[in-house]
Each structure stands twice: as C-alpha cells, then as structure tokens.
Length: 446
Ligand SMILES: Cc1ncc(COP(=O)(O)O)c(C=O)c1O
Image (cartoon, rainbow, N blue to C red):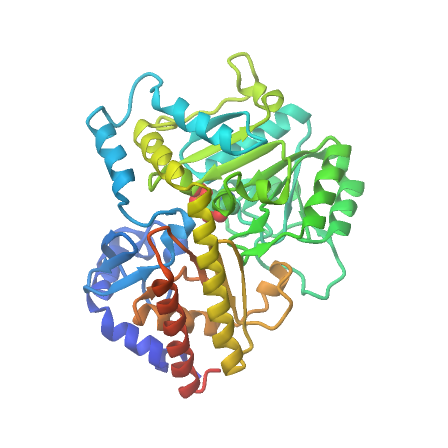
C-alpha cells in the first residue's frame, strides 16, 4: 500500500495548505525548508506561527497540544509567566555582554545544589557543544584518545558521537562491541576509527569493551535513559557495572543528562545513584533559550581553570538571557513538579498501552518519568536494536494521524510532558491515539 493514499496523509494535505506552500517557498532558500534536519518529515512539516502554554498554532490555524516540547526542552510549555517575567527583567538589562555577567553564577549554583556529582559547571550554547567539551576534558585528563558510546545513543552532532545511532546489528546478533558506522556524511575518518560502539543495557558488553580497549579509552558516554534512541531506561545493574569498570580502568564516565535531567531533582543519575565524572546538560536548563553545560567534580573541572589545558569558548556562552530564563525554569521544576509530571507520564504510558492491548497491535510503549514513545514492534525494548525493528511506515502514519487530531509528538514518536498539562490533556492524547488506530485499521494498515 502506498502511504500517499492513506487517510492520515490525505487529511494532513487537506489541513495544511499554507504550510505546504510555505515549505515550497522556504525550500528555495533553506535546504528541505528548515535548518533543523530532525524537524523534516514527509510530506512536509507544518510551520508554527505561535505557541503559548501547552499549545501551538500553525500557519493554517491548526491548534495542537504540544507533547513534543521541542524535543523535551520545554519543561513548562511555552511562555510560562514566571520564565517570561525573568526574561523581561533581563531584556531590560541587556541581552549579551562584553564581560562576564553576574547571572551565570546563580544558575551554576542552582545546578550544583541539585546534582550531587556536579561541583562546578561551565555553560555553552547547545548540548552538542557540551558533549564536545566533555570529550575534550576526558581526553585532556586521561591523555587517551578513544571514546566509547552506546548503540542508539544520541549525543548531539559533534563528530565523534554522530556514529552508531543507526544501522545496528539485529537484536539476536551476539556481537557486543563494534566499530560504528557514520550517521551522517562528512565526518573525519577518526570519528569512526576512534569510537568504540557498545551494546546498551548489556553489562557483558561493557566488560568486553574495557577489556579490549580500556587503556586507550578516555571516556564512556551514556544516557541513563536513552532519549532519541527510543526512551529506553538503563537497568541499574548495567549502570553499576559501567561505573565500576570505568573507575577501575581510569576511564571517565560522562553522563549525558541533556534529556534526562527532568527525571528527578538530581537528574536521572540521582534517581539511579550513579556517580559520573562529568555530566552534560542542555534543553530544560535554558528555559526555552539555547543552552549547553558541562559539570563535574572539581578535580576534573580543574582542567578548565585559567592555567588548565581545556577551553570552553563561545561568543554567546552563558549569555544572560539564557541564564535568567534557565534559572526561573529550573526553580519551577522542583520535587513536587517533577513528581506530578512523572505521574502524568505514567498515566500516558498506561493509557497508550491500553489502546495497544485493546486493538492487539504489534506495538509497545517505552519510557520513564515524563517521557514516552510508542514503538511499532514486538521485539523486547531493551535497547536500540529492538527500536530499529519498528515499522517506520506505521510510525509516520501514527504521527500524521495524531497531528490531524491536534496532538503533536516528535516525528519519531517521542512525547514529553510539560508542567501546565493536566490529566485531561493526557487523556486527550490517548483518545487521539485510539482514533488514529481505528482509522489505520479501517484503512487496513494494522
Ligand atoms: C542526550 C542528548 N545529548 C545531546 C544532545 C544535543 O543537544 P543540542 O540539540 O542542544 O545540541 C541531545 C539533543 O537532542 C540529546 O538528546
């Protein structure tokens, strides 16, 4: 069957004529009509005109409940009054300075108070930059060159982590440690040669990688809950072995909390009791503005002191707008707010699972805390190999069907909740999913 004849596709075309025209115009000046490769999807993306609270409105006037929240970056939805007030106060005092602003200290102090392993922090402009600097710190501290990452882990778009996200071995393939494929063109050969790709959630794979490559490894980088890789939580045993093995072999452990910081006050590492050497952050800590941060123990962060070997650069790093918005957003995301968000997340996962069960679909729901994702596969969801077995067509049709019903997830199906949402919004998501499934079934897609 051709997706272009499906009801979700045809409805999407009918509902979005202005976005369609805009995509054609934008494509003349911006490749694929948007600078953000991960926001492209067939037949064309809808273009947002404005967003407030939990909703966005596109060029055609379609209103959608925003469960995308800019790839989990908006913990409080759009334009939260307290964040906006902080932004307005800062706007009146200047948007960027020619000397350090005092605002940076407050957000640094806040993050260090929240996260046990973070005693010092530096800011930059994206999670990508944070990971880039964390890898440099690890190389400088250890004097080693290689890094290890896990299959399916997404750590932004710096060269050495844009590998091993896709094209993975099959779930039943016994190979545990491999050389990664490049995820995009244009990477230096070193990006694949100097990276060791390790199976996620497999303690034996960690032991094997350390045994084979330990003396060359500067760092392991891990997400405690793989985000873009399918919202797959690590098992406590896997993280315990990873910490033990890296410590024993003098390899730095970088915990990438760019997505997972929202999981608990002290991040997912606090939830798991993980004690990494370095932590990378971004997304929610910017309150809706571009941000990245690297934090860690003083002994490691020392290499960023004035006489240290590593630099954290960036004309707009620690810019006062981001610092002010980020502090307001993080202060709002206290223990009670996170508990409420995570309970809503449980409700969303339960509701979606019930729909799947009631239609006996070849699908499952992954997730944790305030994050969830539907996967069109029956393979046990322990790592990204299982995620790769999912049916991409059904995923796209589900995404479009939900868009047509006023609900937005990420194109890959990741959902993230925000604090202004309530049970009724989660129930609306579940009802839209049920309606979408009924439509797909009527069309014979599932
Ligand atoms: C776990 C993780 N690390 C790093 C990044 C890169 O962050 P940014 O998009 O701000 O560069 C992302 C982005 O989604 C991410 O999910």
